[in-house]
Amino acid sequence: MFQKGVVLKPLLTVTLGSLVLVACGGSDHEAALEITETTEAQTMSIILEKVDSIGVETGDPMYVFGAITDVEILSDGNIMVLDGSYANIRIFSPEGQHLSTIGSRGEGPGELSHPQSLFNWHDGTVGVIDPNSGGVQRFSREGEWIGLDLAISHNIPADPIVISDSEFVCFKARFDMEGETVYEVATIGLFPISLDPRISYWEKTLPWEPSNMGNLTLELFLTNYWTADPETGRVFICPFNEDEYRIQCFNPDGTSIGTISREHVPVVKTAEDIQEEKDFIVFTLGGNSDNNHGFNYDCDPWPNHLPVTGLFMGPRGNLWARRGGTEIPTFDIWDEDLEMAGTASIPSISGSGANWRMTFGSDFIVTWNENPDNFQKLYILKIR
Image (cartoon, rainbow, N blue to C red; front, top):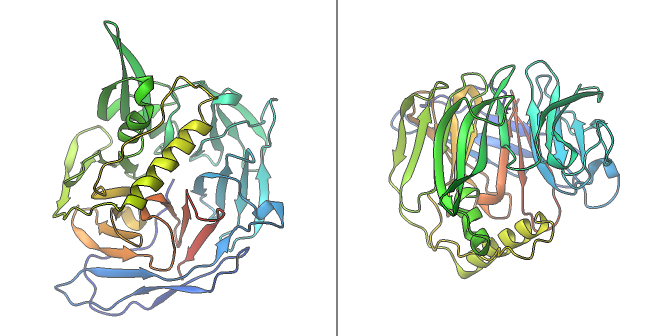
């Protein structure tokens, strides 16, 4: 999923210069990524300034997004964007030019209905999870429909990261029955092209209660953060924890590499933060419930921001952990030895830091807000 290439060293003693960002389709100003000079006693500090963007509110339909549900960077550097509302995959150049579109809304072979996640297969083909269209469909990069890889209609794998020609790491839920009680079991595991994991790295079980769907979803699905390195297969997981900054690290075979931890001072949410979180969950779940009025999507968000609100694989095997409770998106960068390499922040973009997602290319970064104030767009951080 995330291509690597830029070396981030844990100690810098000279200024590395500026990294210019380029894109099209938006009206934002040109920006620079500034790496500040440090001493040997300090770690790297990266500031991401204003960026250009791909995406407009109205105009050329190839640049209007309905709901960005996933983004991948292909081996040739092009950007693959899955739009759940328009039910298609759009491919853009690193400079933001629209190149092609794969799929369209419909019920026939190769058509999409409710696409949710992408597979960036190592052989150059593209996969997309669409339970309403049968499951995991595969396309060539030219847009030719190859076929259905895996039939899925419910308990959908979430955010798959391809780590080999036939395996991926993802989050998946299932239901178990014990006596008369139904339990929902959340798993982060290594899956072949199958619904059952070959290796389970993390698992959590909670009673399934239709009257408590908002809180159940909040704890199981929306506050367990994870990522994987597509080249090494390493897996990093930060399960829900309101008080401790702890990231569990695994080899592909499930053995532990160790745990990343650091001091954390709790940050209390404002009333506005809590209400925004509640509204987002109710809206998201209600829009995907097929109007099931037996479910209660109301929830009670925790009073404090979580220590970690996102994990992303950066260049050269570095792990970027987004801190919770910051006014701007702020990241701790951990190197391959699980040591602190530096920090990064994006002071020029607005919206809750927890709503921002990122994908790294060999020489640029793509970020987008899942819950923007106005309309969705991609920000491209071009590294020279």
